[in-house]
Length: 209
Image (cartoon, rainbow, N blue to C red; front, side, top):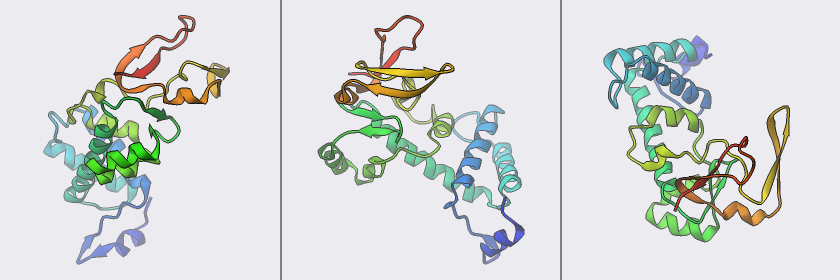
């Protein structure tokens, strides 16, 4: 939590300057917003007056930074734009892989170069997807019109065919891949196909054609 000295050092013309370099601020904002959504203070795609009042008060109490409603909403709108950009990149793509560690599309440089012609900002997702992606999904699902909401490739999945998982105490801890090329053998979409393993296993999610 920021001290009073930290807050005062960010003041300009009597107003605290909102800085978001510290990821914990964004994380706290998203968690607080989810609380207000679950409390029913976002009846449509916008928070109610009561919702923003609670968000502002909770954020200051949690972080020590007295950001006002406008500053917090500006950050909220920025996060929404960034998540929307990522969703549009992932939605309806075919013939590409998914990097579960980096939580973004796995494709060669030529693919990214071609996509960047449509929107240069897309390149920021080449090496890593958005931070706090699960929180972003909870905040903005329903507010972004896309079939991406029906299938989230960033959720935990079993490996593709041609690989096997090693489990300890019921939790997956390692993946042994028989054919590394299989990482590219699925598409981004919403089709779910069964894994040819016993019925007790999870289904393999394949991003549809």
